[in-house]
Length: 415
Figure 1 (cartoon, helix red, strand yellow):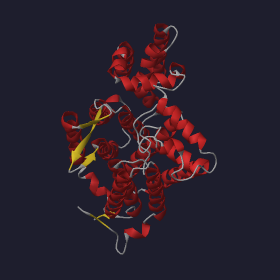
Figure 2 (cartoon, helix red, strand yellow):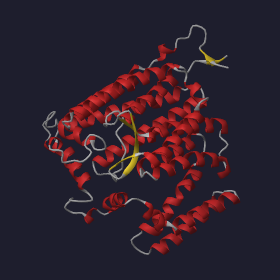
Figure 3 (tube, helix red, strand yellow):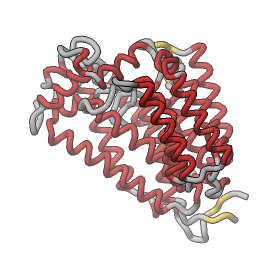
Figure 4 (tube, helix red, strand yellow):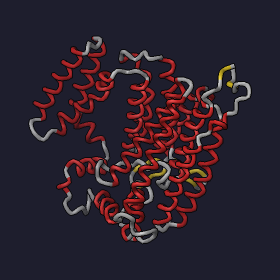
């Protein structure tokens, strides 16, 4: 049956204006930042996409979020199909094949996949009802994440692929998976690091690590089948660690190497150029910044991709510590409002949906700002609501509209 409101109930009474206004202010900061890069055509396009994003936000907010559960499979399959199309017919920029050209506009299906996967995981965890004790219980979730992960990884887009994994882990924890199970899900990565990244005695380190994994599986009383699978995953992950490393693109390996070992490029003329210039730009802004259109590094375009991945460096240089801190506070206030929406959800599907969106926004915010100030490797993740990019901006507003729908329809009932 369709979902209707209680008698006399008006969903718009629960409209959270603070979520909307915070997102709008952040988008306006994004427009100012794009304007600072002195590219009028990009500014106009971003303004158009902001209008589209706002229309999408209000449209999605007005729909009862539970109706999306019915079309979750359709959206997910459509998103996977678009990823396959991208790998065969996609537009390549800077060595990455991530975009489709549609009527003069470029569309990035990866952004759609993130939300489509959240729909599917929310529906999956709602049906599981906290039955996540064995690896077989979580296997369908592995498949839901694994298929888009592989397709996005092949583009290559390691940052977005990692986003899918983080969303899966957080939603699994929220759905009731024990921390010990979550650790074992992530343990193959540690196996790779133990064998391939240890500077001294890597084989000995890996052997000790495998013994610790075996001990942990025994002490935590994992089922025999689960123990065998987790240990095999750790063993073969380490055994084929060089294969995994070489499967990364050259620029991805360089970004990781330069982050782990900055001395490999001490003058920042190659591998560390982006990061060092971004850190300089953020630091040179002082407390109040150099003023709009007066940032030397921004105006002379010393920083590649300063309107997308490195937009926070523009804010730091032109608006200073005050502007950067205000932006960070607004971003985290928005996350706080989304968290409150999660707490107010009337059912499990709404909670899982909000948690997935909260994780998506949080991870991208933290990683983007961290890489702009040199605290994480450079990955291609936009700063939500602020970075230039039509697909990312519209999808951010779509995600916020879903959270708004959860807040507005928390008192609806099934008739």
